[in-house]
Length: 210
Length: 344
Image (cartoon, rainbow over all chains, first blue to last red; front, top):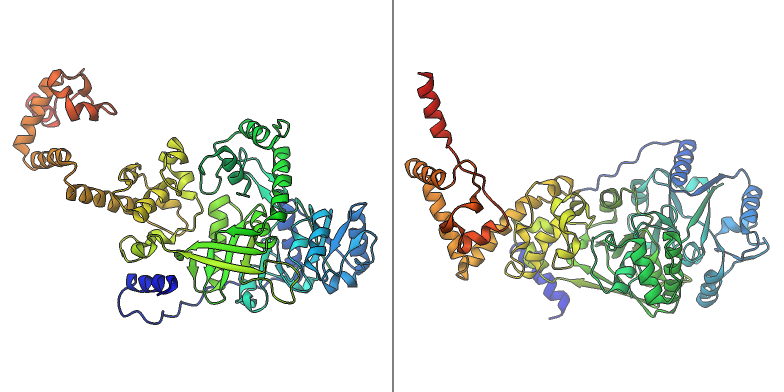
């Protein structure tokens, strides 16, 4: 008997004899309010600002490009392969490395980059959260290793909140190996309960909606 | 090697976590300054922000060089096989992203049926743990990196731990102890925890939740005093976001401890004492006589521990070393009779 069989047997015995199939759990109660897009953007920006993130509503791809160009300054930047970034002309900005398909090259670029530029698969308006699904377009490290993270989010991807996301993507394993929520900059209060941003992840986050 | 800032600090200091959510709660910036300069050979730095930068740069190298990342899990999602982990620093994302192998170790009680069930739990955990609507990072990891993905571990192992949990699951009265989502709210509100701190709890889990799960995982004979380390004020049960009735469980465990002691022939004297007490309390005449005797030995200005000779020996003395009884003086019945008489 394997350890797995053993644990399952013990759990079944613990729950009482004759246990065969678990009863279906009750329907999850998800609350998805009706919120107009303008209000969603406002709520998203308010939540991100409350967490000390920066926000920008871009009217055109050129606006995004200009905002990101100003942020890059001298430091090297890494951009994900998300089409929206190419659309905004981010890849052509001086100092931006992109188009990574190899792990080692990506890792080295991210480890020394001052700025990581990504899109996001969804944004949650009520909590100011970016939802990142790992894929050929979005690597995990770009939003993690550099000290500054910039996310360019098409406005149609702004959901009302967690409940709407979980009703849209009830089984994340069917689409990706990794779904990560990012709610503000990395933070800690482990020493004297004093808030410090940028412990292991980015200490600065910019959310651009286009 | 530990990677959460607080855990890293206490690992360097060779200590145990002080709090479920804030492991280095007992350390000041000056302790951390001494520790970092001694263990890491860096100049003594007392600014918390700069101390955090030091930890970031030391640990960043370790992350990028590590072959295996080991994590726990806050939830395991049954229908899509996801390991869900919440955090604020990013150390868990690095642990589960940079190394080739990720091993997640989780107790079997972390299992929930569907991701949709997390809508409520994630909100409860952030709010009760640290007062956040959602923690900074929440990762749903559903397997190793896929062929099309660029980064992530090549292998993912999920290790399920029983270690007493199925035994607890079988106990209908107490299985709700397994509901705990480790937010730490009961610690923050516990007057006993706040007085004695996390290091006086004997095992991994401190505070009220530690006082109920430690004896249940390890057996009541292992740490029999734990369920008694509570004033039963009920604050823990009141703040618990998953409504574990901790005060009731503490009482259940206390009676289990006594039953266990009785079985092993311990605590005879205490039981005899309480049996006599119960008998006296059921017999009003005997009770009144006992009170009369007590008030003769302990007049109005004398506390129990100052009573002459006889009472101050053996087990009574040990009991009195930590507490005292006020002077007995006149009993309520005596006063009642006296005043009735005066009124007539």
